[in-house]
Image (cartoon, rainbow, N blue to C red; front, side):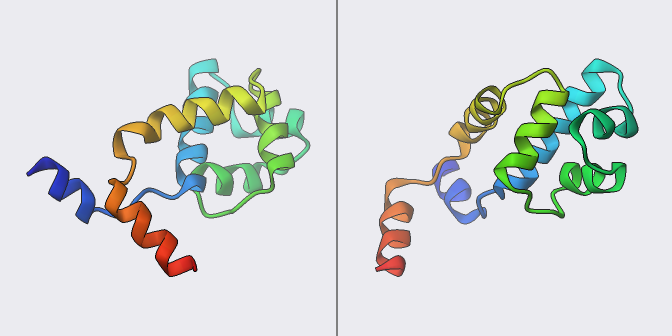
Length: 102
């Protein structure tokens, strides 16, 4: 039954998960948007939009923010992927997605 409920739920968007993780890391470090944004070379407004998942930033922007938070792009990506693992789609959904793409 739990698998059926999970299959009915939409998968989370990558940008939302990355943004949530960046915000969590920033809060854990006790830093403001302005401090991290300055080190990353982005505006505080843009960083805020990234954290909220309203921007779909390039890998270069994600890497810059990850670096400003003391993480590598690989570390951040791995952390988000591990968070996604419990909500990975069932094999039937993956096959259907491939069928749609063909």
